[in-house]
Length: 361
Image (cartoon, rainbow, N blue to C red; front, side, top):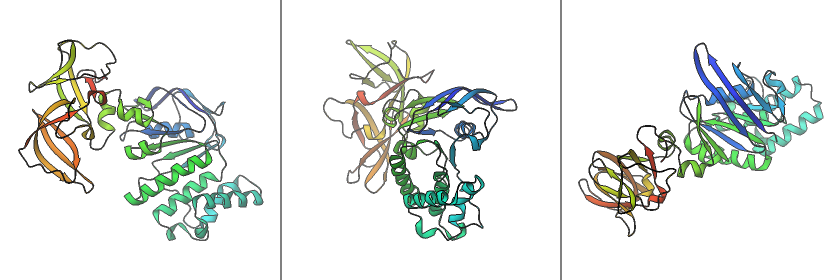
């Protein structure tokens, strides 16, 4: 296990600055996921830690050692790529052992590590096959095994499951989580898939525009996003946003939506003191809205426009004024286009954002 510390990291390609003054610490044995859309800088950060990119400024420390200018082979890391990067003419056993042979590890030790990795990843029957004879999931297991046999301090994963179909992604996601529990190693994982991030991570770093927008546990990021970007990026279907202005009446704080609807926010924890008339966006996730409203809930009048059946449940689409909303409902619930329904939600589980800065209120 090793602690990874990135301090004041800056990376630029010509005049384009991809990462600016980025700081992050990964604890020993932690599974950290870097999550964000394409171009946000997450792979650039991972490749900088691996030593595959030249940095403009900053420092990278691994296990108390300043590795900023060390070669990748001297950083005690194991990396798993999206493209597998297996040697096509070598068997599985050859792929697992090649790096150890070039490092002149003794043969008995090589065999010991290969057997241990094969047992852990359940690829023992595949040892004599070549990559062309393997499925996508089997190839990725071999790629992971090649990193495991190196006996390194930190494992780096660059979107390792994105080339697999949905079923295999789910299966390997479970296996990766089990692997981390068994090894207890420090792992840094890059993905644009929020499901992978929320299920795998001890903590998630949500990135956008070369900056870390929020670094927290999956539960914290899902329940209390710090800004509009995080709120809109994390969650499927996405969080609903309703535009309005802060209103204060009868000693309480609420929001008057643009269609004139007054929504009470009793129980919501404000980060600061909201101002009367302040433009704001109310964020409520589809599963947080109940139809019809229950006693004690804040009400939302919804006009139904469409119901999508999803098997175990259904997704209802509607409007609140001019804003489109989605609501998770039971598969047996019956609503028709044009129905007027008073839905409800608990403000304590909602989010409120400043309309100008996007920051959480």
